[in-house]
Length: 523
Image (cartoon, rainbow, N blue to C red; front, side, top):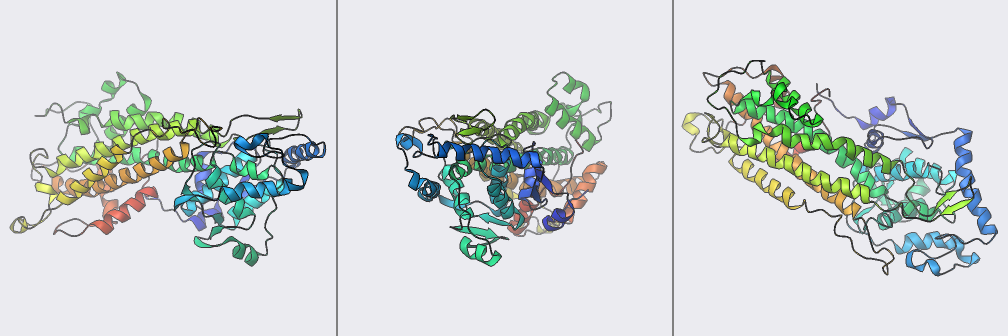
């Protein structure tokens, strides 16, 4: 079955997601980020009262001349410097102003939406000392699809994503730039057009917006979704490769995999059994053992499958946490200073995801290398050329595509160096141990892009290989699932007969993979 994402239509028919401090899933954040679901703030009196209590407690402390980090003091290493009462209102603006030094490419519109959403979920926990009005402004940004333009670079992942999140704080106050329905514009112009007055941050609200893990977590949501889909797509491509190579489907036998009971690995083997329609009794085969890139595919893909549950646990716990500093416990009258902005869990997920998913690229690249080589492809044409015999000397099929896949794989593998071990002491040695979570997340997304490119190349080639195999005189027809999937793919790209430039088709395939175009397996 083919699925299509129409963000505008989906957002109209989906029930709005009500934020009240309850648990939010990665899929719900993704739906908001992709424009498929609206967000509303709960109108429940208990929720509003809980938020208001924290802000009222802070106001009371200020009236009593209490000392609160980042509210009545300078920031970071400057926490020993008291700020006069006359300057307290100016302090939040100073925070986002001096952090306005991000560089590099800017986040996509979808990623910026996710950042706003993730920060909103955290603040709704009710222990950050913010006002209901601030939460309403964040919801307004999502409702009107006005999201901050956020540079990717400048965060070490503690004290949270300070520099990138400064762009969210500044936008609320009518400064810097936004994407309005995908178009970049000055925030002040957009607010004026909507008749919206720039927000005035209350004493702790600048810190509450900026001092957290929203950027790395938002990027982690996308990384998780893309990795999850790639395990399924890699499995389907492996099934195509096994058929096209006239491989041995009994490498995925249920009794065999029962002896090594990793749940995700067994799930991959089961999917391959179903795709290949492998009967219970093995047939005789001149090749008792295929090469590792097909025989051990469940063991490679299974590492990702078996990691998805704990990756989800780490990311969803971070998403639903209060991760700024200090936290405000109005019920017990406590201001709690700590380090919840530290993004170590997200960093560890992203670093491990990088390595596991780069291995998917390596697996598919090795399958493609077999398919194009007449020494290993068991009777298929050289480079999977579909040209007529009299044109064979001129046509080179997937020769260059395989070179490209090898290049993309090499780059993905090169980027698997963990970022989290490269902590740097920053900010006058106040931030002397940092997570590097945002850098790890950006690396992960780059690796996933490369894996998707290898998947697109191998998918294009395996569809060709399946059809070439099925046309051989002694071939059995491809199993129904695989044949139907090739037919679906043929609605996207045609058979490669005479050589043609494939860049546009591969780019289109990469986009479809990122959009999770095909529903592949039920479990």
